[in-house]
Image 1 (cartoon, rainbow, N blue to C red):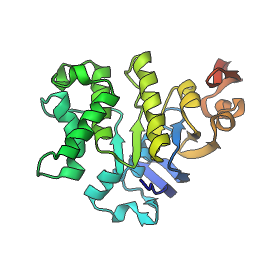
Image 2: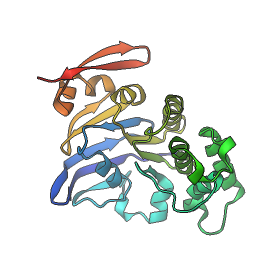
Image 3: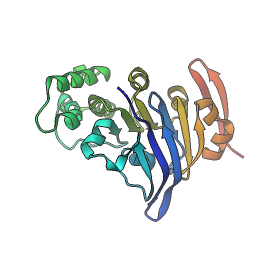
Image 4: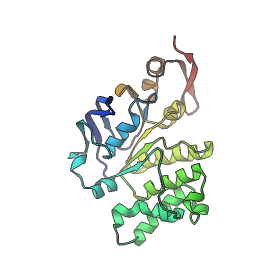
Length: 260
């Protein structure tokens, strides 16, 4: 699979009269997991929505390789970009297998699932450890189980890019680790790309190849976790005093207290 670079150029968005993104530019490379972090209201979810083509910026553009994202059809965009929203809803009373099968819609259209589609669905269910829940109604699941089912729906579409808004919220520690490993495999094995928003800085430091730090809609740091999540950056972004130490799996962030 050849995966094109996903790029944002000079994105500006105003919501309710308040500027949310200010001329933000960033290039996301396939084969990497990129975490977007920052305080509440920093513009993380808005950036992700623009990258997915779900929100049109007031200024600037998003491109996938040489193609403007806005020039792609809805179906082509859905084939190439999978989006997992922060508060996903399930409108119908369906079982998990049926829900995951909806992830194949950009490929199957209205003709129904082919054998290749069914194999992709089965693989996504196995990846997310949902085999025992495949015939359960989604509305009967716990929040964490539902989150995994919705994650499986995105994976079933086999997108080149996975964009996820707080994908670990509601998952217990074990399934958080499973999701982290799944996303790293997604990026590493086929050169696909992952961009996600996170509040947990420790997870961002462990999971991401690259971290973007947003404050008031502006990018204040961009680089590997050790370079982006420094005490100076954390003080500026969150108003906290922090200490960064080396752990077994990467940098660990200890929050000491309020800065100043």
